[in-house]
Length: 400
Ligand SMILES: [Zn+2]
Image (cartoon, rainbow, N blue to C red):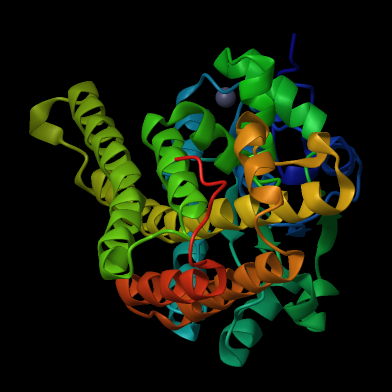
């Protein structure tokens, strides 16, 4: 049972282990620190969540907002919890950089909205992602509010790059450190929640780079599993690829990036349709739908960028596996556990030096991608250079 608490200000909240809190995995220390602080007298009106990308900082910020506004400390079932977790609650503000920065206009608009009375929530929560990207003017405008926020307002700043957060911001916030999610916890979570076999869950975990969202989407997305097969196939035959076909292969890689976007678009469409069904057609919630569409647009952008990163990570995993097996002989260290035979076949064909050169080329491609280059050209160039390193006159061991 959870406690029913009347909330006058955020410090009065008494927390219990509720559905939403227990849905965050691998962050016991962080959650413990947050809950203890929320229970204690001091509480806090300004938080800074730091730690690697994709380990649950943003989700935890939303759960905290839900808990502060829920009769049952984050039941996950009431209207308020539902709206907050879907990012459509009118009293919860979600801020992200536009382009490279969080600008003064954004903060001014935000502070104006915050000064109005609440629509339906008890506590306004402002969640700011990439809190290391304020322009100096924006940071200044925010600072005073961080110092003396209105009593019913809580700020949660999030950053995976805490070295770049301004010291004046850090000093005004209660800092909570998030850690990489332990592999075993991620595997158990995937097995229990998504009904996967152990090997499948372990593979998704290994490929995720510690990012839970990446592990879940790999485990549950057909097109992402297919993508990995295709990309590994391309890596395996990189030494034998016909030069004239490299641009087709680059096109194939681009197609692999785009495919999961269709899945996401379909899910988005469904979400909007379900929402419209919930309401009468005559008072369709235009504002709510607009907010959902904005969030969906952000998600699509992120997914596309992630697709590019994923393709490069899959290529990296292939060449790194060959080096690892070559130098350690240990199969258990390999990422591509389901392709051990193929890795073995390649171990004697190439030198570690060549493999390292390929890794470097892939890393350089990843760096270029920050400058909004044409992806097709970037892939073509990468494939051409890898081919150049690996191509041999004839290969008697070749097994297609
Ligand atoms: Zn609730």
